[in-house]
Image 1 (tube, rainbow, N blue to C red):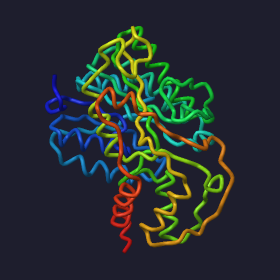
Image 2 (spheres, one colour):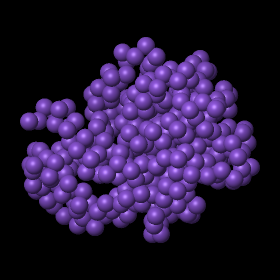
Image 3 (spheres, rainbow, N blue to C red):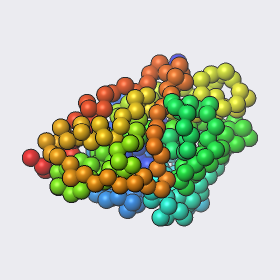
Length: 338
């Protein structure tokens, strides 16, 4: 059995995104051939997306295509022409709060777009389809840590509902068409070249500019922060190992080749403590504004990663201060802050 993706051809959707670009870098370094696609929308500054792609384009084993996933047949055509061995689907409309303001964008990208992914997999089979879900599916659950076996029937945002819908759609297609698929529930991913809509970026930006730092629920919020390189490590390992056994970790139903895994650090950190770390790393004091919890947010996330560890012998463990230092160092360089 292969232990690397060297020589394999991997199609990555969302290749200009935070996790997608980081994954492409990892796959190329491992010797894989990568076809990437993205619609490069304006949810946040497209210049950052182009900066990520600029790191990938010089590699002769990388090819990029601008594709709107929700456009019927667009992905299927690229998939059919490129004939990938594996597909990692990371292209989606992200953001919990934004889903309240732009619900149709989420229906198009996350529901119609994922249906196109599944239809392409039905038409042109691959060894393994890996797709992004989210810790948001746990919604109003209060039992912690969150386990993949917990019921997920209380979403508190449309974004969460679309991600749960993706899991159910994948389960159905795996059952009907024997498509080997694995869904990944990511927990608050952070790191260099990350997403500007995330709290770690917003706090850092405000600290350097002196702008107010809005702290939700008076800081009584806990997040399971997960460093991007470890997300990528888990994706790469899982991609190589499609569902194979009825009783394997992550299986949703024994007879269907579909699994779901949490990918988190298994170490929730209070937002108050998170902000203090950023204050130390930036050398700035926050102009703090305590505000109520926002609609769609949850008080606590915490990943049970025992199934992931059992499946691939790995789970994220980067200490938050170490990962945030790498992000702040990158942020200073990117924005030319001395």
